[in-house]
Length: 54
Image (tube, rainbow, N blue to C red; front, top):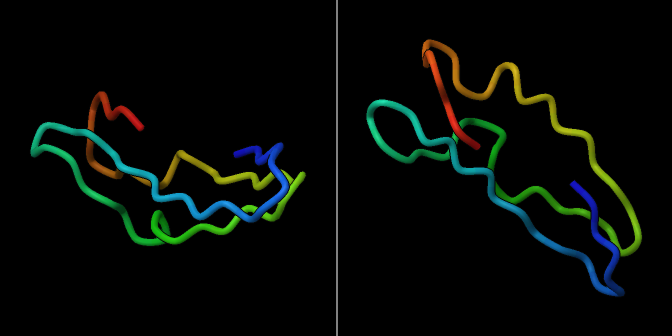
């Protein structure tokens, strides 16, 4: 995640799978400081889903 802005950004990752949309554990209230980047591993966000979309 990148935040090129001048204020902090709060991000919620939503995973769309066979059962619909959900926020996985650790996917909510992610703060990205101004001018910073955060690396979020996506591999563990949708365990058990064949074709998840983030």
